[in-house]
Amino acid sequence: MDAGGNGSALAEKTAQRYGTQMVERVMLSNAFYLDHMPKLKAGLEDGTLTDIPRDAQLRDDLRAIELIDGIPKLRRGDSSQSAAAKAAAAEGGEKLKRHGDFAISLFLCNYAWFREAGEIDFQTVPARARLSERHDMSSGFRMRAPADDGPAGGFDFGKDGGF
Image 1 (tube, helix red, strand yellow):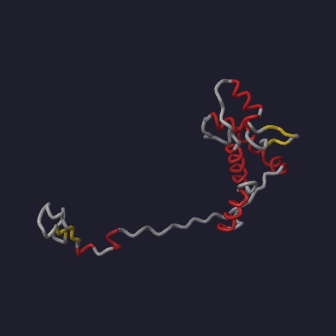
Image 2 (cartoon, rainbow, N blue to C red):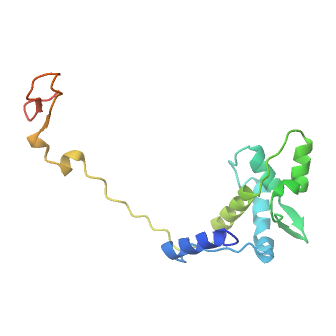
């Protein structure tokens, strides 16, 4: 999980809840970008990353990744001032201010995919008991009708009755 800025508290709580073996808190540093961003770029170029929605805002987030001091990363703050956002705005229409969230989420997802993590064990959850197993349905139930609608004693849907 992104453990920088506002994500720090969330990542810490999540790691405490599920354990540090299941949750890795990642600080997006220059070294981290330099080590792992080329894998994202390669996945986008060679078609390994497929089924990414064709959405203009998602595309703009990915285009906001740029080389800053030789390191592929996003600028701090909104990405509306990136070269890609300016080029997209030149195509026409007003663009929303974006922060590159999709690019970072795809980057972290790609990073997690290639991580050697511990075993993920699957355990089934017991099925919920059926209504008939939770209650003794053999005694039936009684439903009273309003005073002006039907017999005064109500309707009896017991063993012998029903719809």
